[in-house]
Image (tube, helix red, strand yellow):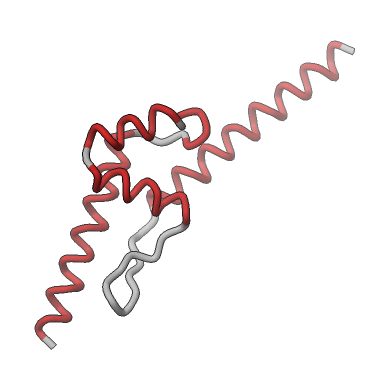
Length: 98
């Protein structure tokens, strides 16, 4: 009986680690932009991006409330959102020169 419980606990821990890695990978990936220079994001990335653009306090509160689910860091998310904004600015600059 005890071994079965230990096994279930180990499986749950491994599942949590993989879930956290999947979320981190989703944020860490490169920025894809469409023809109108809008970022192509998943629903979760879009929500994080919107909160990051709303300001530090909004992002901090959003991540704090969902920290157990999202497994993201406020600083990393803010840095990622800045990279998306920088890529959009470059894209718009290139589009304006055409």
